Amino acid sequence: MAAFQYFKHNTSKAADLLGLSEEQRTKLMTPDRVLRAELTIPLDGGGTASFPAYRVQFNNRRGPYKGGIRFHPAADEDEVSALAAMMAIKCAVVGIPFGGGKGGVSVDPKKLSHTETHALAREYVKAFAEHFGPDIDVPAPDMATNPEIMDTMLAEYERIVGHKAPAMITGKSIGNGGILGRDTATADGAIIVLRALLKDQNVDASKLRAAIQGAGNAGAQAAKLLSDMGVSITALADSQGTLVVANGINVELACSIKEKEGSVCDAGTQMGDDSQILGTEAVITEPVEILVPAALEEQIHQGNAKDVKAGIVLEIANGPTTPEADEILAAQGVAVVPDVLANAGGVTVSYFEWLQNRSGETWTALQTSDRLEEIMNDAYRDVADFALFRGVTLREAAYALALSRILEE
Image 1 (cartoon, rainbow, N blue to C red):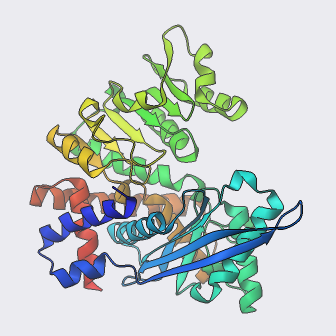
Image 2: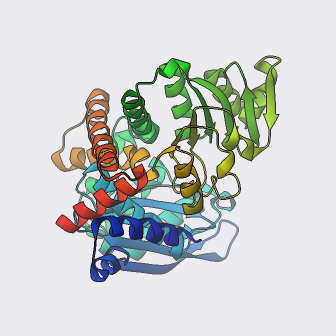
Image 3: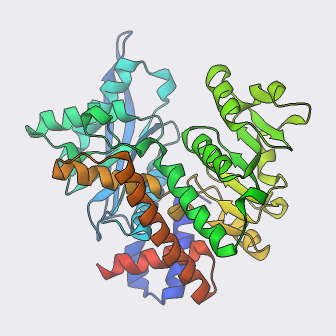
C-alpha cells in the first residue's frame, strides 16, 4: 500500500467514526494544489542536471500550509502528497493554526556538492516563490535539508520579493531567526507524550526497557531522554544493525562512538560481555516494554507485528506501522502512540519560530520547552480521552479529532 493510501485508510476509519458524508470525505482526502517543476542546476564539473520537484499544498482550513522540503531519491508526488496530508492532521491534533503542506526534490543529495545543493535550494524557491509566504505556505527542513539550506532558501525568497520575510520559512539557523530547541523538538515532544501515557497507566519508568530503531537526531535524543527517565535502553539500531545489551546500553557512549565510527554497532566491544550485534530488523521484536521506531516508514508490518513484544509503540518516525500491523497490534493490546501525535513536537516548535519571527521577539530555550510541554500534554489528553470515550485506538482518535477540527474552520 502506497503512503498516500495509508493516509486515506486512516482518514476513512476516522470519517466512519464521525459519520462524515462522501462529499466531506472526498474534500479531506484531496489536496488543494499539487505544484510541479523541473529544476535545472549547473554542475561543478560542467554541464547541467535536472530534477523533478514538488510542493503539495494539502489543506489550509486552519492556517497557512506548513511542511518540510526533502531532497531524496524516493521523493515523488505520492510520498509528498501523503506527508502533506499528514501534516494537516498533525497540526490539527496539536491545535496549532497551520494547514498541511510538503515539498520534495527527487535527487540523491549524496551525489551533489555543497555548491550544487545550494543551487538546487535556490532553484526550488524560484520555482514556487509565488506560492510561499508567512501567511500562505511556510516550508521547513526535512530529509537532507537543514538550517543552512533554509537560510539559503530564505535569502533567495527575500531577493525575489524585495523585502525581509523571516517568517516565510522555519528551521533556520539561530543567527538567522531560528529558535532555540528546534533541533531536539521532535524527540522532546514524543517523550512528553510518553510520560503522560505512563502516568495514565500508573507505570514506573525505572522498571521499563526500551528498544529504539534509529540513532539519528530524533532517535538519539529519545534514547537520552528515556535513559534520563530511568528507562533501560536494551536495544538501539541503525542502518548497520541492532546493538543489544541486556543490562542496558550506555547511550552517551554509543551515540558518541556512532559519531566517530559511523554506527552504534561499533560500540559493541565497549558494552561488556553481554552485548550482541543483531540484524537491523531485530530491534522490532526485542523483549521490551517500549518500542520506538524513529527511522523509516513501514518497519512494523504484517510479517513481524505479531512478534512485537512491547506494550507501547511510540512512533517518532513518519508511517512506521502499516494498517495491517495496526490491526494486529490493537488485537494484542499494544498502545500505539501515532506519528501524528508523537512526532508533532517538531512542527509545534516551528510554529513558535514563526511566532517569534512575526513578532520580532526572541524566545528563550525555557520558553520553548515550557510551551512545548503544555501543548503536547494537552494534545495527548484530548486524544487519550477521545479514545477512551469512543473505545478506539489512539490513531483513530487522533485522526477523528483532527478531521473534526479541520471541518470546524
